[in-house]
Length: 162
Length: 162
Image (cartoon, rainbow over all chains, first blue to last red; front, side, top):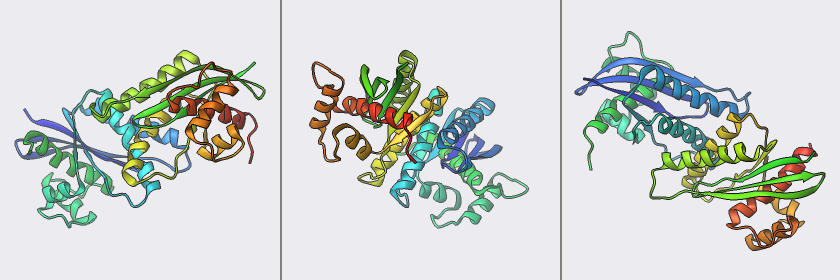
């Protein structure tokens, strides 16, 4: 039975979501999307939108595990505080759904997908397209990242290294 | 009719909560407490505990408004990310309860309570004790801060300055 994984590229403005099935190491595309929030809305509303987006993706696609990209190196403290708020409600939504989480670094995602850590956004989208046999690169790049996070995170969840 | 305000001193390890009634500018103590989370628990659990603490305080005491201390100057990016996660679930809980929020800075709180911005933790606890006619300084200091945030935030909510 395949392992269904939801990948999340967490962000306050845009939060990428991607779902894949893993049969062994072979991934199959299930769904991808992106919660986009508007700076015109107050940030309580935006946090609700992020939480609702994650919760709906879990309810609709019923993943067995969730992989979230970790972001330790923020550009600045204000950005870290904002991304932290988004991450807080994302982890809360996952915990409320009683799902296990694996956190992976951007480098783990890039290395897992492209074999080296230096892939740019466009190369990542093309690799994700090829691996999931899609007719076009998934957009926006946040959603492509989320699919990559789901694929790599799912493999790490299945074959944990210590 | 008094304005009931919940004040929150947001934090990941300890989140202070305090409720006061404001009749004009005269505050009356209603309740204070503190959500303490343990580093032994995973942080999803800790985020749920913070959210549940805020939600329960709102359900039990039914404030008309919430005041949250803003923290723009974090010691470092890792701290900012953690405090951001706590703030995210706090604002989510407030938004889910459909309550208005006022954000106030630490300096606004200190100036509002003590007349000058340089009060230390102990002086703040004593001022809060005196203003609310309590038999002892409220503990822990996070809860005392939350009461101060509720008092000052409530006055700002009632007499907004532009």
